[in-house]
Amino acid sequence: MDALREHDCRGPLVLSVAPIFATKWLIPRLEGFRAAHPDIDVRLSATLELADFERDGIDAAIRCGRGRYPGLVAHRLFGESVVPMCSPALLKGEHALASPEELRHHVLLHFDWPAQEQVTPDWSTWLRSTKLNGIDATRGPRFTQPDYAMQAAMEGAGVVLGWRSLAQADIDSGRLTIPFDLPLQMDVAFYLVYPEASAERPKLARFREWLLGQTGASLAARDTHPTSSPPRDQHGGNRRSARRQVGSGRGQHD
Image (tube, rainbow, N blue to C red; front, side):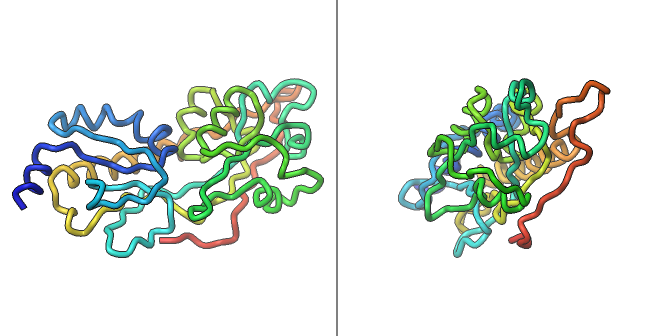
């Protein structure tokens, strides 16, 4: 018990975080946590491996799943959807991405999520949802992480099904754009999880309060930001007449 108290008072806050959440969402905000809590050092382990809290000395984990974590406390941070994203450069030229049908002329980027954590819709699922035919959903390069595929899209290598909330900074900066707003809702969400016995540890309690505040602010900002900058025709109007919402047909999970 003395060792646990010493770790909680002086040791770092150790977090196991899914890599894409770490690079696209958490790391850009960590300076804000450090400024608010300069006495707490954070140690990040960016991995898809399941955390063994006791063996690995992990205080908390952030995972993408369905909220079923036996023996653990789970706080839902936010849900996620995927939507086609690309470099703004692909909105120009002979086969400008003015409509979903133009995808047949562009490279599709894929990423392979581990089989035990298959949580992301792929191009085949998205194309079925939009009722698009005649597009080969299997062609194009594959990556082991979604952020690798998103980086390739920024470089103009093709079109990716990007994670909407996690790509917000890249969209705001103009590195990525959404050529047609046809999102497909994922049936999973990001969760903060930790053992029940750790719930009242001061370091974790302060991080939990900060994180839940940040995710709430992030969702509010996302809902007020434009999603894309579609190309305009010679009369100044949008080439797409209206946005359509595409759902997965499955309900929200806790």
